[in-house]
Length: 440
Ligand code: URA
Image (cartoon, rainbow, N blue to C red):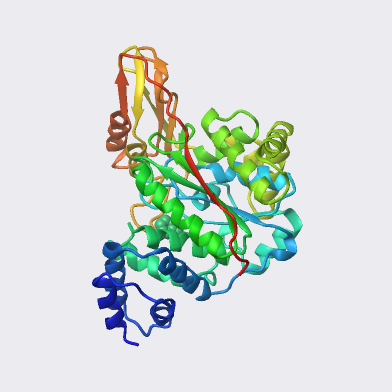
């Protein structure tokens, strides 16, 4: 087999067999296939696509490039994954809620890139919180505390790490089969029996429109079920930021408020929904209504918040910041934007707010950039709200960077107003689910 023949086959619209895909992936991981050939193949895939069989084979090959955790001794471990967006701190609420209901949660999360935030960056706002647990520490904590949120170990799906870095540098990220196999290979390797997926749709998401989001959701559900996982996938709105806070420490504070029963409606609703789906897939409840009651009870009783505190303590974080979120890192200055007139909020463009937070230092333009956990934006209104002239519409937490003024102008520009009443945005857009087809 020669890599060049397979690149040409894909370039000309042919289908690659499982063995051919495995030859390419394992050859690349071993360094036998150079970057330039893999980059050419990836570009051919971007243009020509892959059918479900090829996508499943690519995923299997990426899983097989590293270790696959066996979590069966913990029962049915259920994972969750969001394709990411602006203000999406759902994991920080859902994971402890679900764990407090007795379902183990073993979560490997990522960092933010561009306008989209990352769970690890948010958790690192809590002094001391470790995101680099070894596999042994990961398993021991899951046994002891029933919840782990850490970074992905290097041994899981290493092919994805290499391919993602190459895609990032060669303009080959936006491809449904490449994104779906990248996400699902990590979920499968991390040992879950079921996954609850949330594909974000809108300006502040990877998938800007519903058609693309549905295609990605279908591809991920098909990969999961072909690998023996039960999968549900919700499509949710990301045209305006989720919740009110965007920026790391600000989002942790909002997650703690939500776990205290005092969170924004959309975040609370999404967290309870995802928690219910996880409890059903984890067989802790027979159906969604009963699961929702369990999740609501965990929120109301404070059990979810106590579990979050246990998580932070187990991973070396300073729990005083959980007990008193005012102690989280704070930006020195807050600039308040006010409504220019009495009006309705027609849009708060999520991508623009996300880009502004990168300019404030809360996100990174490229991998490895340092971030400032203190900065970000807190919205005081959502689409559909009526605001009075002069009423605060957003607080911008700035730390004296050269781009602060740009960021403030961007947040201002993210708002659109209408003299007429505007309907609230619907959070839940669609749902796709699949049952395991085999148990590989
Ligand atoms: N997230 C991933 O893990 N992989 C992609 O390809 C895109 C988003």
